Image 1: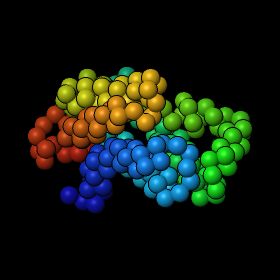
Image 2: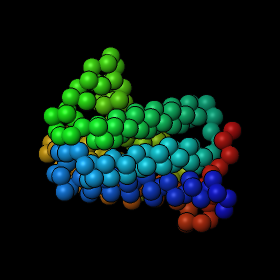
Image 3: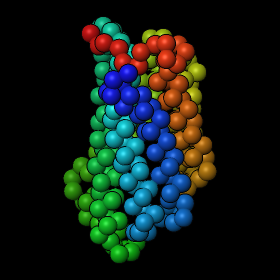
Length: 211
């Protein structure tokens, strides 16, 4: 396996694992705006995770293989949306790290975020719709790949359930809820299954030619 394929394969583990890892690193500060080592470590792990998601999404496009017409348009639209979501999260996490490095307390961090969000479009493109676009696109891509029979229905289903659990838990009980971690763990499992495709691991190539 060449280095590009090894990196792509690793991204199916590293990306979702970083979601859960960052959440766990935020537990000592209860997920609050507290500058210091826990905040920095958690957001650095999340940033690395989304960098890996940036590798994983094109790999999923490779899993789709050659498709034409409306199916190709659907796959490419989902991939483009996922990459835009990755970019939004990378920008957000970079801002978060900057705030953690420069602020001395919660009030100072809030001031940084309020200043950044004061720029037109930042709130929507980086912190709300833009950041959530990745998860919506991941669900769409999983369902499309399952419809194309490129991945198993189980892999797609677990991914969708994981995103749904994480989203519902976040909005209903907050980001600190243990159910958020359950959702992240399910996403991890689902994404690993997506990376395997419909065949036994090692029998089908991860990357396929795109035509």
